[in-house]
Amino acid sequence: MNQQIRHIMIVGGGTSGWLVAAYLKRNLPPQVKLTLIESTKIGPIGVGEGTQPFTMQFLREAGITPDMWMKDADATYKLGVEFVGWHNKTYFVDNDTYETFVIGPNTTTMPYWCDKGSKEFFDWLPAYRLAKANLSPKMSPELDHTPGLVSPSWDAVHFNAFKIGDTIRQMLKDKIDYYDTEIVEVDKNDDGVERLRDVNGKEYSADLYIDCSGFKSMLLEQALGEPFVDCGDTLLCNRAVAMPTQYTNKETEMFPYTRATTMKYGWRWTIPIGERVGNGYVYSDAFISPEQAELELRQALGDFTTPANHLSMKIGYHKEIAKQNVLAVGLSAGFVEPLEATGITFTTKAVHFLMESLVKSNGVWDQRSRSLVNSRFETMFSEIVDFIFLHYKLSNRSDTDFWLAYRDMPMPEAVKRRLEVFDNDLPKTMFMENQFQMFHSGQWFEMLLGSEYFKDRFTVLDPKYEKYAEMYCDYQKYKTSKVMEIFPNHSAYITGLYDK
Ligand SMILES: Cc1cc2nc3c(=O)[nH]c(=O)nc-3n(C[C@H](O)[C@H](O)[C@H](O)COP(=O)(O)OP(=O)(O)OC[C@H]3O[C@@H](n4cnc5c(N)ncnc54)[C@H](O)[C@@H]3O)c2cc1C
Image (cartoon, rainbow, N blue to C red; front, side, top):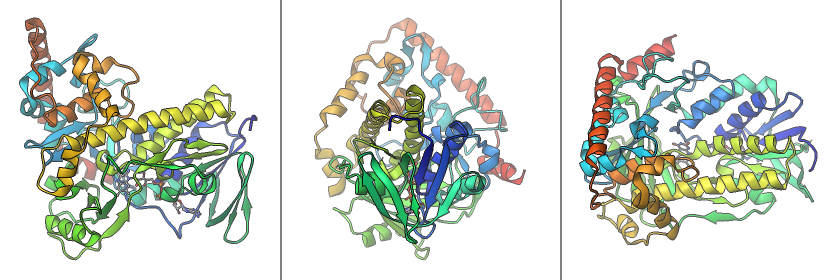
């Protein structure tokens, strides 16, 4: 395996498999052969409709611009996630614009907002104001709600989980080696996987195998025996029940954000996409049965007829997602529950790590390449686990055993260390390289402020700083008000985009 990679084989054609294929096709030298094998009989998981901003950017890097896929995938815009019921007040974690917080070298508005309080902050937060007014984050593909951008904004979107894969499949199927068949056997040798065999006895082999087979992790876990690290001790939710509802009034219901509302034993998502609204209850089966969860969701939605889709979730990851000649990407690598819609971003990040390692090793998949991918992935994964855990841990809901279990759970040492960053040097967190991988420290701040973490913090603000921060925030407020005067309703914008 100390030769340059000449042939990469992707196993799986869910969202991960096709995103990986699109990116590699565009960014690897043309002499590297690409094969994708999927079983359309097995099919993709069919959930995963909210994204982080990286997905849009990733698709651009794969040569797929929004006009090429948004309509076909029923996509809508997402300005962030609104958290309802987690605390007395609703809070919002936005897609992060640097200008929300940064006012100078090593200086942010965070101490100012701690002093003012969470209600004042979320009433002011530009993205949240736009979101609550149901306004589109864009006036046109070029004109964004954040004036003055030099390069395209890192928009986040919602989309139809089935259609996104189909859309990319149509674009790519004839440009790579593509097989619709089921792999039933994996032969191994000293390098890892030697060859795959399908139901008809046909054999397939390559230099590097990308395992996008979903939760079963067919190559990494099943064939190479890489152990699964279970994170169920801190993230209790392990099942979901999903059910779409139809729009009755798109103008008000197609809001440009995800809503995460607490339930008795977990939370439910509301994700408005082009043709319908996606809903799902994420819960722990240690506290409630699937039937009870379905009923609680139906009662919340007022829908007693639409068929429900029950899913189990494997919460955790593999320490070595890059092992011998296999790299696991997507659900086969690891998954945390969907509270922050990070699943698809794992895919995009893993591909970036792969590319980074191949560039550094001149196209050779060696131990150094694997170590780089593994350490980057583990750092990112542990940050996300901590981030999601804190939403639950800091929630003040305590009416059921589920919420009490979180209240009584000790704070893990790793989480305490992460919080120390905010305790010790709040104004500088935005400038701390390598502390935050998936979430910007601004997003951490929004989650912590919304969860009243800073409530009892006593800070004496320097009057000059306070004046300056106030001036800056007033200026942002004014700018947002002006944007809101001319930006279109989200559903009107999406309809215009689809009609083009
Ligand atoms: C309840 C829930 C909600 C989620 N919400 C979000 C969200 O809001 N945002 C987000 O980013 N992520 C979310 N996710 C995660 C998201 O669904 C996945 O990250 C995404 O769909 C990618 O899945 P995948 O392609 O890795 O696996 P899958 O979709 O499971 O695809 C597996 C592929 O492997 C193929 N395959 C399997 N076995 C074989 C075989 N033997 N031979 C050939 N092919 C085979 C299948 O045909 C399929 O094509 C959610 C997940 C769950 C469970």
